[in-house]
Image (cartoon, rainbow, N blue to C red; front, side, top):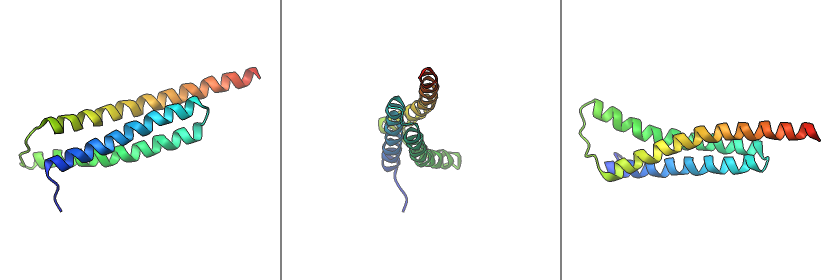
Length: 110
C-alpha cells in the first residue's frame, strides 16, 4: 500500500510530535531524579524519531528518483515537527546530564 503525501505528512507529524513529547517528559523525570526512566523516555523518543525520519527519507528518495511532490503547508508543518523533535531530544539529553551532575554534587554534600 502506497501512502499519499498527506498521509506521509501526518505520519511525520504524529511520530515527530510523539518524539518531542517523550523528550519533554524525560526532562521532567530527570528533574525528579528518575534518571533511568528519563533515559528510557529518550530511547522511546529516538524510536519515534526513527519512524518519522523513515517517512521523510522515503520522500527524499522518491524525489531523487524523479517523483514529483506538491509542497503543501501540511508537509512544511510536518518538517517543522520533525526538526523541533530533533532539537528537543538533543536538548533533553544535555539537560538530563546536567541534572545528573547536580544530583551528584548534592549527594556529596550529604
